[in-house]
Structures are given as structure tokens and as C-alpha cells.
Length: 150
Image (cartoon, rainbow, N blue to C red):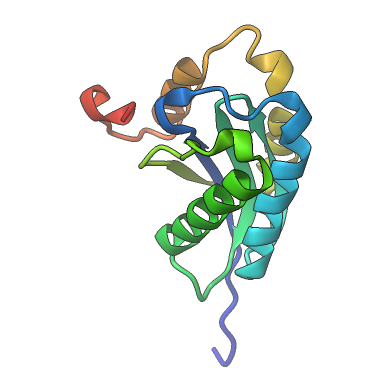
């Protein structure tokens, strides 16, 4: 084949350190937009960024020339620095070490977009911890609960 064709839809989830509710509604839109711009900068076409007060969801197309871990490191490092600069009252802000990343079927992208858009309503009923456990089980991901919340 003379051309490399790749289409990896990734649903990425990560939390603020210790799940501190730094991402208050008045800041969310600006933070989500900036995180989307970071994904696009790495040629990972952002489809939707959203979340709630203590975590982020990113739906993007992972570019064929970047490793997932490199994208996440780039997004976390640069967004953390930007958040501390843009919102000086958040000078202690940081992201948790780990992340969840799940490939999805392109036909499921509309459902994932809706899910990301509905985070505020969703989290009035379900905690971030329960949400993440749900995704880990849904995608049959092995995990050790002793380390997952660091």
C-alpha cells in the first residue's frame, strides 16, 4: 500500500490531582478550548473536550505520527502550566499521574460526544470514581484499585 491510512478515535479521561474540583464552571469552557487547541497542535483532530469539576474527557483522532502517551504528556504539561498562568489562584493546580484512554468505534462517536456534553447532569448522579470504574469494566481493562486513584 503506497499510503498509510489511520483512523484511531480515542476517548481519553484524566483527573485533577486528588480529584480537587479546580475546573469550576466559570473556567471550564476556556480550559476545554485550550486543551482542544493542544490536541490540534499535535495534529490529533479534537472532536470534543469536556468534563466536570475534577476531570477531563477528550475525544480526538490520534494522529498516526504521535504515540498516545506523548500526546497526553504534552496536553497535561502545557495545560497545567497555562492554567496556573491564566488563573493565578490555581497556582497549586496539577493533573493526576495516570489516565484512561479507550479506542472507540467511529459509529459510537455521536454517543460519546453526547456523553461528554452531558457531564454536569451525569455527575449529579455518578461520581468520577464510579464513572471511571464503569469505563474500565466496559472496555475490559485490568486495573489495581490500590494505584488507580493516585
